[in-house]
Image 1 (spheres, one colour):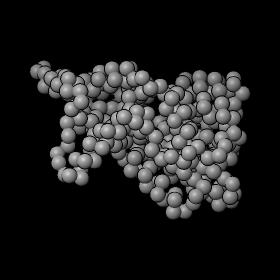
Image 2 (cartoon, helix red, strand yellow):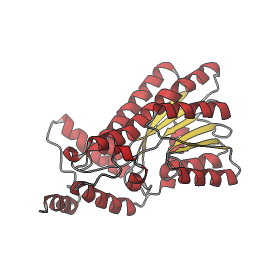
Image 3 (tube, helix red, strand yellow):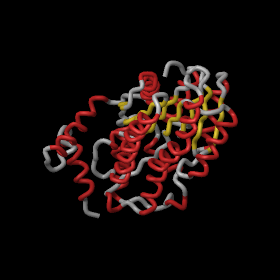
Image 4 (cartoon, helix red, strand yellow):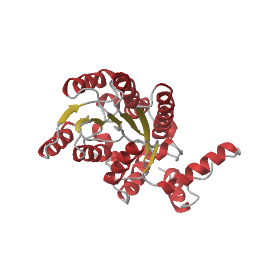
Length: 302
């Protein structure tokens, strides 16, 4: 993308983490910014911040798991700013635990937000962007989907999250290839961050009651939350740095976006397991003390 100024960015999960930082960059670049988030107070705060800086902003409370709400968002964007140029399907939630202990509500919540939220964004906005490209040879568009390193490897005790993010990587790679069949004006990227302080470890705060918000967590879920809290809290790469990586990738039409490039070594190991073929490698080979602590916590007698 040659220029951001005067163009429109739609960002889900814009009240915190990557979404908020990407919204700040979009505003600094002179874009019209559409901030969508399920948490009203965080959304209001973000809208007020960017508006005070002089940005043209549309705030929209949105549950990305609801197709009708995503369509209503698109209608509002078209009415206010016209067809967007960047769509950042970023909203996501975190959940862990042994995979057989995840309840049906766990699956519905995590897949609803992490996967179907991206599906709804792609289904709703891509046709609008293609129509704009067909009508204007100077139109440039880009779609970014937030996955995770958990979409490229499979860490234990994180099954429902792994599944959702692997699906987003697959969807995004297919989107990239499908767009290339029909246009050269719209690109796609997938963001695969590692442990970055974004607030995702506290995503239960926005879990709907009908999808198990008040259910007591299992021991494996409590163990996983403690480990993620520690890992995310110790993260050295900021959400702002990752958001800048996203805009750099859009400008360069680069597909894979990593927060921690060195972590790709674990992806290589996994692919070697697949190709050779051999049993999945120990994910804690480089940090055996972490694996030992996890096994001990999960095998501890009640």
